[in-house]
Image 1 (spheres, one colour):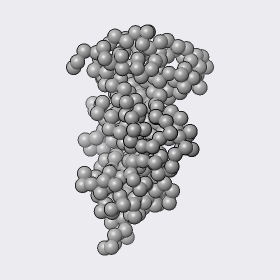
Image 2: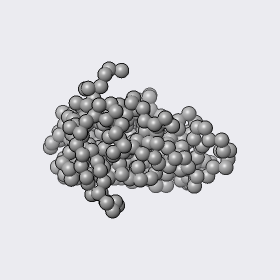
Image 3: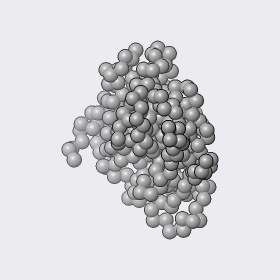
Length: 330
């Protein structure tokens, strides 16, 4: 068998083994529809069945997109994004593929405006530019409770649909899914040197509102024991940012306290009994657009990993929607 460079899938066909390269992008869809990257003519496969995504770490995730008959890794049905390992067997319908990733090292490219020769970049230099960013972390509430109360097939369809719709919403509002963490997603907005623009902050706020609206309607589509809810954390600040994308698709990722705090703010909504928690810088940006302490009240929360209590402004999705309704039409 000819050695295939980089990560790839192997599909066994009647005429032999077919290699499907996982290079040149960071996202590939699988399904019966012609608009997929990998079209599989298997009547047990949904039109848009699953997605493979390469993250900044070089890890590959398999995400079921709410398929009727499920996606399986080594014979086990997946309901949340799972990390793939070299040699894993992927099953969609009655079609089996093998995932191979001989060397899990991401391609590294300089951020726009970087004058360094790209040949000098290595994987260890991925995170190398300090940029102003906003981080959004969204988590499904009571997910563990739900897994115990509904059929595994329904669970897979619901979560797959949620991840697919969340990705679409985040993309429509100028960002991308940077990380999947169990039943949560993280998205990052990279701001310019002039700071956070009013339009960018509106896009982020609208994304959170749209995610809430989408999630709250899933029980109308699936037999759920209760309507699904999400919690959200938003934080704005500086972080080390790198571009691990290829071609015309930059793929930025960020590390640092700004990112860590966004996760902590999301967690704090549970102890506060609210829906959304904002870092102080994020709140100040919203204040310039008319947000008030009446909408997003001030709280001091104790967060894991922080020695002293942290200031946050938190509220409900109703409060967020009231703020958005006050905004003039674009």
